[in-house]
Length: 481
Image 1 (cartoon, rainbow, N blue to C red):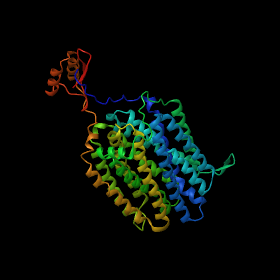
Image 2: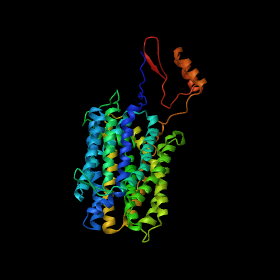
Image 3: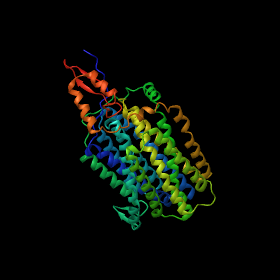
Image 4: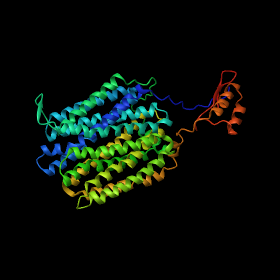
């Protein structure tokens, strides 16, 4: 009996019900930023004792949000590894998000705002469950395309925010169940409602995958994790994610501070600025979903990061280190176009990382580490933003951001050749009808040598770089080419 050659068998692409939870999570995460961010600084300032305190607590609210997100990501990673219950993990996080939104609205104080953002941070750990699902149950050849689709869905939701903010501007001071409601805390109500709607989708529509990849918590030692990361070069995704999330946090969360100081408070104006960035991000994600536009995740990452660097230099010179604020039109153009390279690298980085580590059974652990690197960057950036705009001035913050951006290229160069494995998972061109017919004609012939010769001569092309021709020989044995 000849020895069988084994190859990982990829699962089929889940249908709508299998992906419904992922879609719902993406919409909720976009609404949290798009609805709350334009008015959050004004909300904090309305209850703070001074302008300096407002800047400090604005940064603290961001930091607490992402620190709690880190804690939640560790827990969610262990849950999905041990049980494979993605729906339970996503539903629990969305429930926490709805609770945090209620606290954000009801407790009109600095402490209430920070506490509400803390619970929302725990709820935002839902991203670990969705990414673990992709890494475990989506074929490698489809992951970059799916990540681009999810990113596009997230950005498509962002332009809706200005319409919501316009409606909320008409909300005058009123009371609902003794809770004071106005245009500053009303966005929290919408975020809570979207969390509840997403929870309903997960409970009613989402279907758990029939095959669950499970791992016992704690079976992956630190040595095992380090070994996988070192062997595959996947650790560079942590560097890429850290700097990218730091950069985005600084750009996005300083925008309301810059526009309020230069042009006066206006949540509607800021909402339209975020919406324009969302439109550009949507267009970029649509292009990325057309997988044939690029053939390499690692090259797409580097090209996008070069674009991000150009915009960071412009932001630092015109916004961060300038004594005179630029015209609003310049801010609008810079902020909108920045989203093209920023969104450009995200699907590729997530897909590349999942391809490199997905053969490990503790996929939830690895995805939680990636998400922790993102949240840690945003938490530290929140502290830096609060201190810079309250005490030391913004120029140092923007120069540090440029230095962090530049730090990614040396680690990327060190593992460049290892990352090529992820490129090999890209789908190959489909077979022509003639070649398909010839290929399947060989299968019942059971002539392994003839099939191998025809493949080598180029008469038949396998449908992907990892395709194996499998057939049965006379004694029931399985052989693969």
